[in-house]
Amino acid sequence: MRPRRSKKLWPDHVLSRREALALIGASSAALLTLALPARAAAPPSCFARPQQTEGPFFVEEELDRSDIRSDPRTGAVRPGVPLRLTFNVSRISGATCVPLAGAKFDLWHCDATGRYSDARSRGSSSVGEKFLRGYQRTNAAGTARFLTIYPGWYGGRTVHVHFKIRTAASSASAYEFTSQLYFDDALTDRVYASEPYAAGRRRSMHNADDFLFRDGGSQLLIVPVQDAPGYAATFDIGLQVA
Image (cartoon, rainbow, N blue to C red; front, side, top):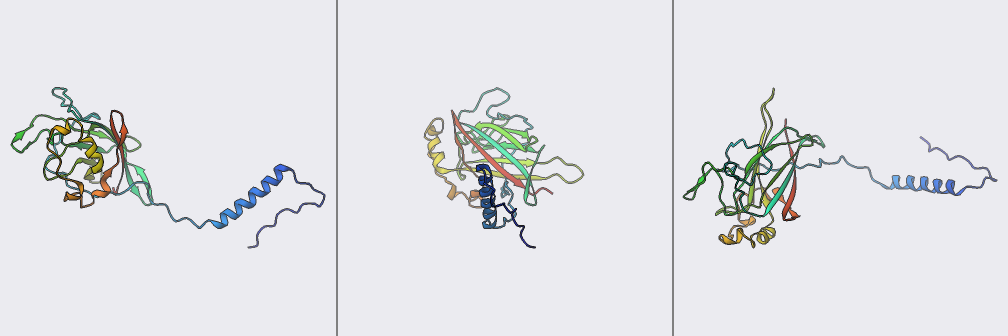
């Protein structure tokens, strides 16, 4: 197919400034279009993440709340550096990401001393306490938000947070995804230089030493930024929901 010819100008026609600029702009746009290679299909903006074990400390508490710092029995807030976590959950559909609304998003982790609520471990018991646990339903945008504290650590594990995402059962079977989040070691060192973390044992476990982190943990790292008086982080996750 032959290219279309531009309209011929009469010899006595004088181009106005506006016409000249329009002609130059059109020519430049045509050259730019020819110079650009064809784009491949864009990958999803969300990311599929690896699942990891829920560990021994998950408890079905049914605590519908975004601020998980306190024990609901007493109202006492666990001490620690505030941490705001925002999760954007999507269902991967081909090359696109569709917000996953209405999913149940559970979050739980240990306190600044490495202690979990409602558990028995290392000769102590916190049964009946429910601090640092809770769930939210993802909104229409697939988002769930929590206010918690920067987690502590305990022997054998690096610093981490547990989460579980579940869809409601309908005509199809319910979907469940469980994994963990990790933190940059340098940031953890800065946080642990302050109380109440500094009062505990010196941390001996880092990401590279953790057997679970070595199994896909680099894809589960979050990057908190300062959000006075603490930190905030956003984590995007895509799920292969049928």
